Amino acid sequence: MIRINRVDGLEFLRFEDSDVFESGSGAIRLHHVATDSNYAYTNSNNGTSPIPLAKKSFTRTAS
Image (cartoon, rainbow, N blue to C red; front, side, top):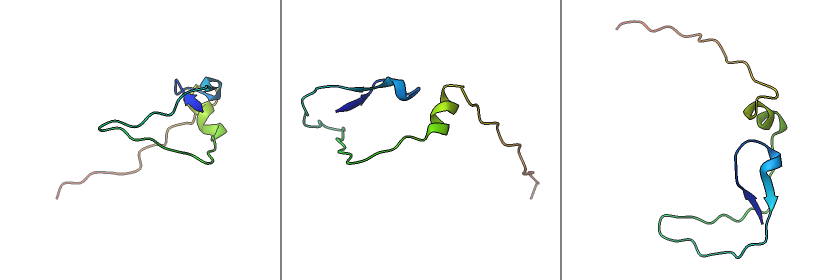
């Protein structure tokens, strides 16, 4: 299994041997056949390639 121990970058994904356990009350278990990783999103999270914030383009009027 691949376990996500920290949300920061791809270097934190680790292959681990683990027993699959039954999900308890209030928990879910997901089985992924395929996933992907968005390189730009990963780099924006760790600050390598920051994404500039959009400027506010709306106004508020009284009704």
